Length: 257
Ligand SMILES: [Zn+2]
Image (cartoon, rainbow, N blue to C red):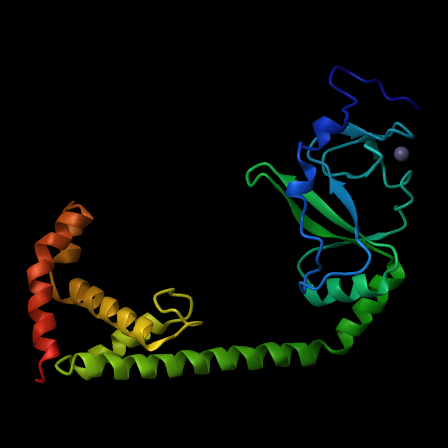
């Protein structure tokens, strides 16, 4: 049955896909970063209505569409409608489903905000998905344990870093009260704070980070800086106003108490 087409329908390729498709296409690697020998097919979750070029079925926004020789096809006409959709999110399940599926497609959607295609999920054979789900169920406990172990390792690393940082601060500022040195170190080494270069935790970098952290701590805890900000001072003016006080305390902390 031919649907009544009003105005803008059907849309051609240009309306569905932006120009320079190649440059905005998602990476042809899987979620582990390893590349597969065979390329995945690409299926588009469309952002605006279209129509299948073969059966003329109306395709609404969020429907899936396959491009064949620049013609939009519905998944039935593209011989892909027997595949099961697995939205992104479960890395292990996705990896295994793809491994067992001889025919598979990556589903992408164009993000207008970010101006690029973004991976939404995969289309895989139902049998592959079933097998993958079974495997994931079987070793779910093991994978949870692995994640917990990794989490503990991170906590340990944080603790090591905080201890090292405390030592460093006390070495640089012998006059700094130990509890304060510890508090600054903890704050600085907190995972994700981005104040310390963890990966390249060279001594120089850590020293620089320690100095910056000590200055920041002094500014907030031992000067009127925060009050000045609250009173509407600009950051620069507030910094200038407390500069002398910071230098004084730094000097005192550098000297042995
Ligand atoms: Zn069709």
